[in-house]
Length: 428
Image (cartoon, rainbow, N blue to C red; front, side, top):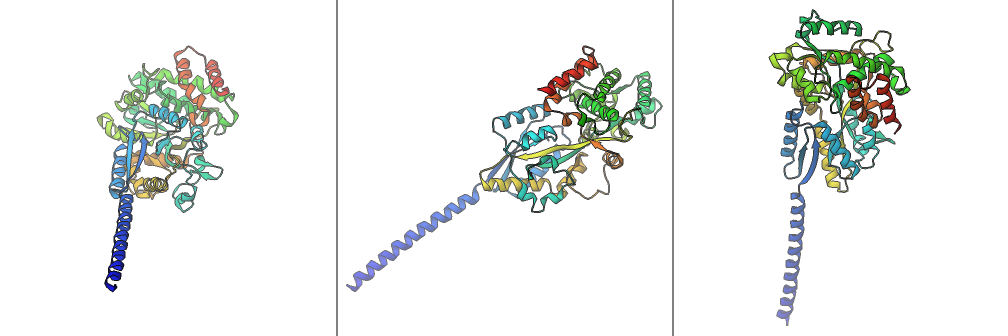
């Protein structure tokens, strides 16, 4: 009897141990499965291809993936053409199909994204001290109702880039201070067989839009946009654009960014308006060691205008948005990657290798890149910085600008008709 009882107890104990072992095994297996699950982050980016940040950005992403192997993996969707990229992002937000991470520009377009309700609220992470890494006021564009909805990243200024070697052929060792002197120089360049500047009306009319932006502020002053398109400065700037197109290439009407930039990089034009992100391309693609000849200058002062000498067009150029997540592990992974991209040493590396400027605070390098250094010095002396035209008007106006400009400079529309076309877009 005693033997049967002990046998029964042993059987029960053995069953309990087996059951316990099975449970432990299941629990261990589940934990192992959870640990092995890799979080994949889809990052749509135009910092690829010929973009000056592409090589370093790829290195950083590869390092992050290596450091987080088996836990987090960032997969980049490469879209090298900026306009195609922007069109796709507009579609994805409209269809609620945003990638985990993507890039967009500041201004009215930024407000479309940050107010959409489809982005991750980063406020609690920023309030943990992260926001102290950014320069003053740079979070303004991404803040709605005191909530920080994205990460400001790249800062842009768009002064005149000029080939001093070509200007010297026309007798100029310094860039002109006023538009009167500027046009005189353009005439002398043409007399030497040198095309003064790159312009374009294709795509988003980027380079020409920057010239128009400079002119509008130089004529109307830094608060000109507060008065709307009816301010005389917009019409006067349109008349000046007609003059500028007398000093550009024959293919400027309809030309895209690749054409306009290509003329400058191949020393077919002496001037180009662009930003610090373009410095890397000058180094890599400029012919005849042209990097050694390129210098930076503020746009000219407009005589009789309300602008001031040395005024700069400056703005948060790119912002990184993160789609709202329901998976907390994925949200944590996305934040970890964003913090990695904004680490001071990583940003400093990006800046040094590309020439780009960022809103993340980094120590001033002892051997700052020369063109970036010139931009920084001029920016620090600037009496004001104003964002460019497309950031200061409604998206519909910015979209209409290339077509209106093309008609203006080709002579099919008067400056007055150009403004009316923009006003119609503004009224929509």
